[in-house]
Image (spheres, rainbow, N blue to C red):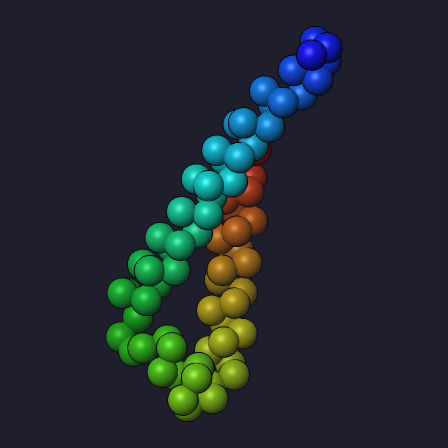
Length: 73
């Protein structure tokens, strides 16, 4: 295999590792938010149709994703 292709393949490995680390941290942040809030996020959004809570939670998750992406870069 040529040297350049081998070098490119070795650069994919850290990217995959960072992806999984980010994915796990993102999931942990969702679980922490679920535990800290005094109500069930799932019940409020699905059963009570609380659109504003969905927007707020979504915004928080996007902010967490931006922070994780900048940290892992």
